[in-house]
Structure formats: C-alpha cells, structure tokens
Length: 512
Image (cartoon, rainbow, N blue to C red; front, side):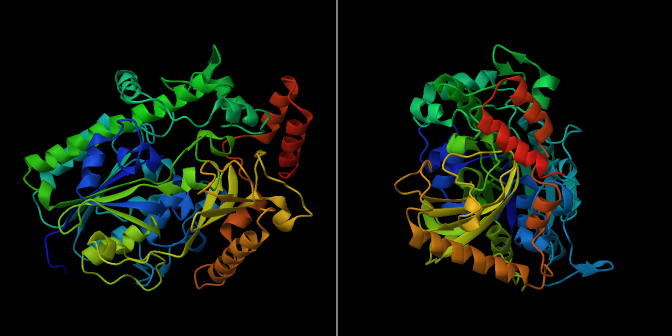
C-alpha cells in the first residue's frame, strides 16, 4: 500500500479562523501547542473551505468534491442531503467517500465526533471503520469529553500500524462555556484586536438581521433563554444583545479566544498521549477547521453566516515524518484537497472524479503551484458564493436572507441584482468598501470566473443540470436560524427603522 507506517491524527476544530492562532500572526497566546506543530511542519496561509458552514464543509472533505456536485450545500431543505453515487451496495469507484476509500485500502479509520448526528450527516460517520459519539449532547460536548474518548482510543490503538483518528472539537463555536479559568490568561497575553474600531461599530448600527452589531440574538433565542443587563443568557459566557461599543466586542473576542486556548490545551493532551505510546515522532498531525467565524466583518459577530474570508478561510497545519519543518505555503488551496493529499501519503491513486488535488509536494517543501482561483459556496443565514483570486474577493449572493449589509446595493437594475460585493483585501483587509462599481474591469473578470465555474459544475456528470444551492434558495430561503415573521414583529414592537422593517418584509414575502 505505502512505503512507511502511516499514523494520522486529524484535529478538526469547529469555527476556528486562522488569524487567531499565533502561527498565523495573532498577538495573543491562544495556541502555544498548535504553534509548536506549525514550527515543526507546514502552514497553509491560503486554505479555504469549498463549501461552508459545517455540513457542506465536512461533506466536501468526506467526498473530495464541491457541494454543488455532492448535493450538500446547506443545513436543511433540498440542499442538506448528500447524493451518494453508486448502486446497490457499491459506491462509485470514481467518486468514493474519502475516509471509506482510505479504510478499504488498509488504513484503520476512526472518528470521535458528534457531527454526523447533529447534522444528520450519516455519510460522514459511515466513512470510518469506527465512529464514536463522545456524549449524547451532540455539538455541545466540551473538550474534556472529547479528549477522554480520544485518549482512550489511542490507549488501545496508537502503537498499531496504519491508522487515522479524526477528533472533532466544538468549543470554539458559540456558546462559549467552561472558560472562566482561561479568559484571564488570554487577556493577560495581549490586547484584543484593534479592529473593529468604535467608528466601525457605529457604522454598523442600523443593519438588519441577527448576529449583527445591531441585534445579535434572534427574537426566539431571547424568548427562550432570557436577557439580563443587555446580555442574552446564551451559555455560560452570554452574548450582548447589541454590539454598540468596544467593550461589547472585547467580551465576544475574549470568549472566542479563551475557547481556542482550551482546545489548544486538549491538543497538548493528545500529543502527550502519542508521546507516552512512543509514536509521537512517527505520527502525522493535522490541525484544521470546517469554517471560521466573523468578528465584525460585514457587521457580523460570532457567526458563520456569509460567504466571505472570516467564514471560509481556515487553518491547515501539517506536521509529521517526511514533512518540511517551518514552511509556510502562500498558494491557494481548497480544504478538501486534504482528502487527495491523504491518498498521496498512503500511496493511493486519487479518484478520477474528485475535485480534490494533492498538496503533498508542498508538504515536502517542493515547488507547488496551488490554484489560480477558488470558488466557495455558503449556505446558512445567506446563500451565495465567493471567488478568491490574488488579493481580490468577489461575493455574489443568491439570497440575502433577512440581512442588509454595508455597501450592498441590492438594486435589480445592476448586474447580479446588486447582490454583489468586491473587496481588495490588500488595501482593505476588513472589507469595509464595496468596489463593485468603482472597479468594473476587475468585477467583470471575477464574474466571468464565477460563471465559468458554475457552468462547468452544473453541466458535469454529477449535477444533472441543477444547482442545489439555488434550488434551496428558491424553495425555502436561508431562514433555518431566524424566522422573518418573528423578526419583523420584534422590529415593529421596538420601533426599528423603516428601512429595517422593509428589508424583513421583503424576506418574509419571499416565503409566500
């Protein structure tokens, strides 16, 4: 099968954005253990999930394909379901599930995660020889619960040959719990990010929608959990009902960073177990995420609700035998390229109809071209896709949900109905200015990349001429986590602006 004994520990951290890790330049001491892995391995600076958030992203990793081809592009409705290719008992050999393919080729695969149950993603768990749900509280299990199950597995199997263990941590996804002993550590290690400034937060007031500066919780969440002193009782840390100043922002980012540090401590425990079993130096350790989290960008806080870099850019760190040390890769890749890379490391052919491409040459410090551009879909709160090329990001919304975003024209007389954004991340890293009208040549180039990708994908063997994201947008809209009718009632009862009421009225009418 392969030329050396293969042991892989894949640490999958929900909602982790890379720029809050020290190895990606963060000033706070959130990730000393992961930073150590990065120093001994390869760091991919420009890794993006092909489909966000959780269900589409992990399905893409498990299939090596874009969501438009697998069918899984959102968390509910028509776009929730994975269309497994094959017949009877046999999967299509050209489009197999990645972890199942590795398992059938001789690698003992296991997963410690409640993800499959939380998102009804049984195709994900089915790809592993073992799929262990660490607690009955799927999606809310704490790091200690996950780590105890993972270390028990390593007790039994770490010294064996040829295994892959996937360990999934949820702590970085809100609500932020069990962090009281950690918050002071991250605060003492450095100040909170300087952006968003107070002026930026002021400019975000009056936005429409939840998880925004103007209103973080949905009305249903406030009714169910209660509000005290402007804080909705969302977990132990709570969340501000509105983000109106820097202190509100610091409260959120302190909870986020403390949760990251807790997971980093858990990673240290796992590495210690590998050391105790005598296989630490022989194990390839991978750290990544399913998606990131906005912390003020486009007016969104502590949520993965928009097709933009805070949501779609993820860390990818690989450390282990035969891996280059201290190497940073700047070329763009999809996160699902990891599926093809694992095949390469196991000396397996990459299936013909995967979209994933191996990045193993970069792991060995060799010449690596990466991808010229990426097209990444998003399917919750809003439906849309982003195109990434060089320092540009182009965003096209298929459905804006109940949201109004700064700089979004939303004008049917403009190309794309005005539901487009164009940002130059080199000069405007927080994407505060929409250049879709000011830079028409770049906008046209990015539109062409998007349209060409969409045409090829929709007309591929997999899709039968249908875009499942567009179909779900038409059928049900991106309203799983916010009800337009209840939000409209809340706005009316709380004397919100005419503009905000109009936006939600339009969203509500789209359901009829």
